[in-house]
Length: 193
Image 1: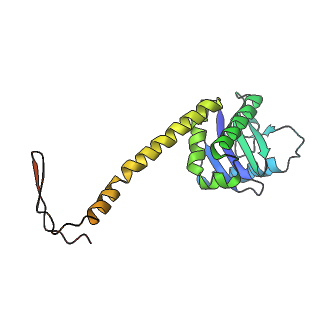
Image 2: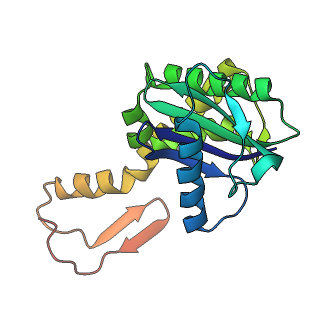
Image 3: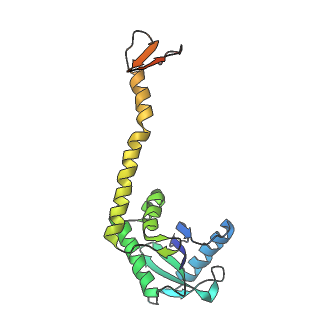
């Protein structure tokens, strides 16, 4: 099971942190710092897994990571997870981010954190791997983006209606509005303009 997913830059600044077990905010920050120190001091030519830090569970847990450009992608997992399977999952995650953001960079993770979390939620939920097929993940993310755009149109409808009423050139304020069998009496209101 995946216990935590962390992304931080070369300076240790967290760009994404997702914990699948409850920790206090202070403990989470300590785990991020400890994980950064463990991972960043390793040489580039050594293997990409090591024992977890004391705060995250010690030798019962493994840190599996990849270093891409300025970012470390770190998954903390228990002994039931395959190291190579998690390395592959990190690769799929990074490639999915790259497709969704067209050459993903650190700024994409900063300014589109909600989209990054949505992509991650398509892959991992509750510490369990849900999907590893990049095309399926992208298809679901695209569907969610389309839904958000259509909802934005609905959410903006009241503002557009008020704007349309303000732009109407009515000689005077209507006192009664009749729509089919419904008659609405309009109270005395101040001018819209």
